[in-house]
Length: 419
Image: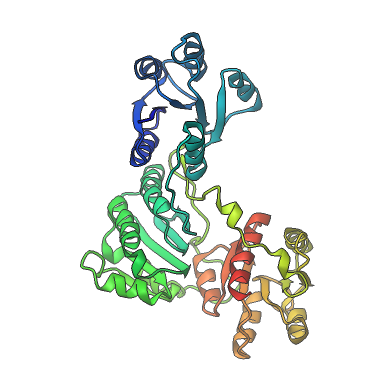
C-alpha cells in the first residue's frame, strides 16, 4: 500500500484529500503545520509528500531542507500546493525536487492524475461529462448542474459547499438548484440522490426554501417519489422558483426594461471572510472535451446586437479562430430589419440600446414566433431585469464586463445543442 503524507493547515482540505486518497486505496497521514510535517515525514517515510507552501511553526522551505538532509526522505517526490505564489518563490523551491506545483483552488482531477503518475498506479476516475458551479448571492445559494452527473464532482461538491458556507457565514441559506441541458436517467439515481443529499446536509436548508429549476421529467419524478426530497418544489419556470424563495413576486418591481431593481441575481457576492478557496469544481480534463467550433465554419452565423463597438469587437475576437460568420448590429432595429437575411443560429443581445432596446427585440421575436437562441449581454445584473428577459425564452445571460472565455463557453453550450 502506497503511503502519502499531506501537510496543510486547512482541516477541510486535509480531510478531503484523506477521504479521496483512501478511497483509492492509499494510506494517508496528515500533518497540521510545518513542525508536525517535519516529524511525520521522519516517522512515516511516505512514498509521496503533498505540501502547502504557506505553513506555520516551520516554513515549507525549512521542511524541504530537512527532508533533503535525511537520506531516508531525500528522494520522496513532492507535490506542492498554494493559494498564491510568485516566480521567485517557485524558483526557490525548485531546487528541492518539487515535481509539480498546483495553485488553489485546485482542479482535483489534475492533482489525482499527478499522484497516480508519480506512484505509478492506475486510478478508476469517473469521466462522465458534468458541469457543476456553486456561488452565493444575497444569502441565496445557486447550484448549477449541466450535462450529467459525475461521481467525483458530486463528492467534491460537499466539500465545496462546506467551504462556501464558512466563507459567506450563511446560517440557513435559500437554495436554487438549476439543472440545464441535463441528461440523467435511472442509471444515475444513486448519484442524483447523493447530489441532492449533499446540498441539503451541508446547507441545512428547509425544504420549502429549496427550489429545483429543470425541464427534466425524470428529475421531477425522482424528487416526488422520495420521502426525503418530495417537499422540494420542482419547476421549469425561473420566476416561479424565485417567487418561492423570496416570498414575493420576483418580477413585480419591473416597470420597464431600463429600470434598475434592488438586488443582483447572477453575480456572486463577495465572501465575508478573506480566506481563499481551496476547491475548483471544474476539472482539467474538461479542456479536452470542449466542443470544437472550427467545423462550423461557413455553416453557423452569430448576430451581435450591441451599441458598444468594444463589445462587438470582443465577441468577434472570441470566435476569431473558428471562421463562424459574425454579423454586427448597433441597435435592435437594424437587427430586426435584417432578421430574415441573417438567419442567425445564435444572438448576443444587449438590453439597453438606443432606437430599439433588447427588451423590445425580445418582444418582437416572441410575437413572430422566432425561436433563435438568445444570450443576453447587459450591465444590468438585477434580478427583476433578468426575470423579465427570461419570460421571452432567453437561453442564457452574461453580465458585463465580459470575458472572452465566458462568451465562448456560453455560445458553445448553445451551438452544441443545435448542430
